[in-house]
Length: 251
Image (cartoon, rainbow, N blue to C red; front, side):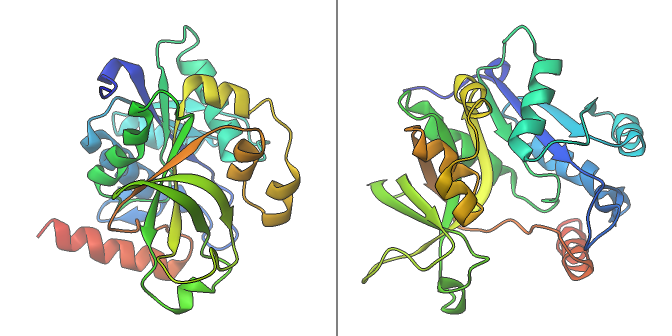
């Protein structure tokens, strides 16, 4: 098995202006740059392929373009991130040159480039349709918290699981590690094309977890185990934390 080359990989960063807890989130200033530009920089630093930002607002579009990044406008009406990145994929690569698509959320300004690279790694196995990330849960409160999504998986190696289920409850039962799902995805292009044609599944709606749609359809998801959780910026407190983290890195 060999790693995909740079021409085969498209990194897509979806960004939406609508945010109830942090209005105008993509344009929030972090160390002198809008958050969405910081995320694009982290994706570029990963050096795995072409980076494109997918936005639904002209102001965000213009800011990203002014920073020198490729950017595409997408519909405001998408119900999921996968639908948005699929629209962007069809617009920026209609010829089908990219064989792999990495979806880096637009609210991860402090994500380590190595973490982005790790998400692509399971796709070196041709039997894997979708790849994502996880970290072992250490905090006891997180083991029962419903906002912490758990991966139930069968170990393939010391650093990888084959996903069997994702859930908001505590699982699996019994002694052993529990894993916190990190929602950064890498898709084989054909898998993304199939995924967006599927309607919401029963378990997806019950758990409010989109990735269950793929498992219910028989698609294979492998999960790379990493050692850090990227900070998702959803609140003003998260924003201040991100500013402190990136400020410390530049000193």
